[in-house]
Length: 417
Ligand SMILES: Nc1ncnc2c1ncn2[C@@H]1O[C@H](COP(=O)(O)OP(=O)(O)OP(=O)(O)O)[C@@H](O)[C@H]1O
Ligand SMILES: [Mg+2]
Image 1 (cartoon, helix red, strand yellow):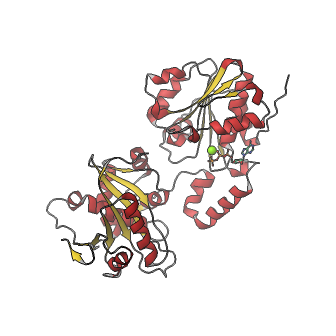
Image 2 (cartoon, rainbow, N blue to C red):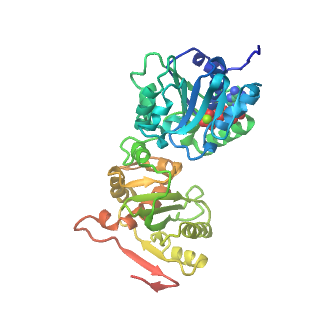
Image 3 (cartoon, rainbow, N blue to C red):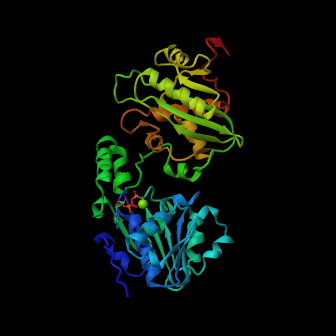
């Protein structure tokens, strides 16, 4: 007989007793993934023949799954002779198995293949949709089966938060908030990353490292929910793409950034935010980046705000790429007034972010009807608003209002309209 020794951080000890629901939520590096990976290996050993599944909302490749971590745990615990690691699954003692799956690949039919499973672990559960959670819970139905969740909370309205951190969690649920201070294995590399964020990104720190909900302002014209519910993993077919730039007044005001955002309009008529290439530095830097983005996305034009520096911005772009097509726009209204029609498109679910643009989204969620409530100036939002306004010009203008003043240049100095 072999003796299995697993050192469990104190904060995780409550999870060692049986419970239908176990949830560890908290910031980066708190040991959540390592703990549940060990628990999965342990359960496979203690209950021969048991079947487990490691789940994510989206799992495009096995590399994104916990497979590698579980393999490492099997080796580190010295029990490699009891397991057989195959390409897509791990055979466990007594004819059991550990699988790795994405909920988005499941239908209400295919999920039935998981009936009779003994444990399921949902990694990054903050991204789990209501549909996925609803499908999963009654599926894992073996006697004494358990469902585990690890996540970094984004929003109180996310389905996993509603289930486990809401007013009425399941009666036997074990839920703990854990942070890096609860992880005795926290590494020096992670510590230096943490310290850097604490200094340089105070607005994100609470969410990233302490597991707090993402920052929002009261009365914000965008909210996380509308961003998350429309988020896409892949870029759809697009009709038109623009790179939009909100150049900072001067590169001297050290903290200001040049907002650079790439957005497009899909063949489905919806708006898509593809990239945020916002940067600091001199004019040459933002111009280089904007032109690089233009090439990368094969965009149609660069939209730029003309206010700051007259023709300067266009000349700067043309010095990088003489043939660049520039659409100059002029601000006649305040930032948040310009932003509102675009926020309205979002609330109609007509805009999706392809991937996550955390810093842009932070700025968006601190934009209120009364102005910007975040630190510094909302350069990323400004760039986004210019790009979307260009793509949705008719919608944004509304009936009976004059078109915004727009000058277009194509090629070196030639007028286009
Ligand atoms: N049981 C353990 N044994 C060895 N190292 C561990 C253990 N638990 C945590 N660590 C170390 O701490 C680091 C952070 O742990 P882990 O990846 O589990 O955190 P997490 O809470 O899942 O964070 P993230 O949100 O970044 O995924 C690991 O990369 C590893 O270096
Ligand atoms: Mg993790």
